[in-house]
Amino acid sequence: MECSLILLDDVQMQKMNNEFRGKDTPTDVISFAASEGDQVGSDESYIGDIFINMDAMQRQASAFGHSKKREFCFLFVHGLLHCLGYDHQHESEERTMFELQELILDEIAPRST
Image (cartoon, rainbow, N blue to C red; front, top):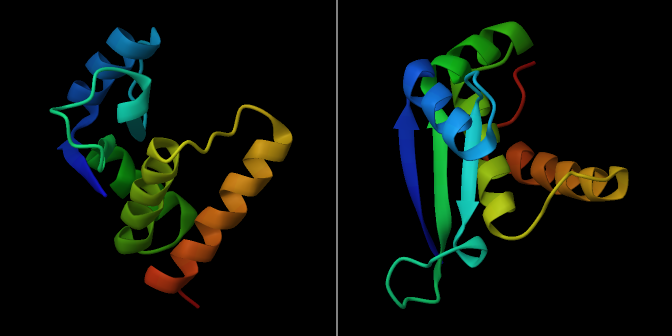
């Protein structure tokens, strides 16, 4: 499987969030699953694009009291799970997605003690 990872700042992310979600504010991560729209090329292994706001990542790492590595990994895993079809629109979906997210994160970027 492959995906694109694009790193943005607050200004760039706000433009994207406004254009694609109608929200005129920056957000931390936006992902676009290849299955939701036009796939890039004909490669079925391409799963989508993940856009991470590096300004938000740094703020959130500080606010949550954990490393930048963990916050970056959190945002990437969150976006990746969306590209793989997971969502959190409903409570049961959220529970499933967030449990999987934590399981993955604990392996690659454990919480600081």
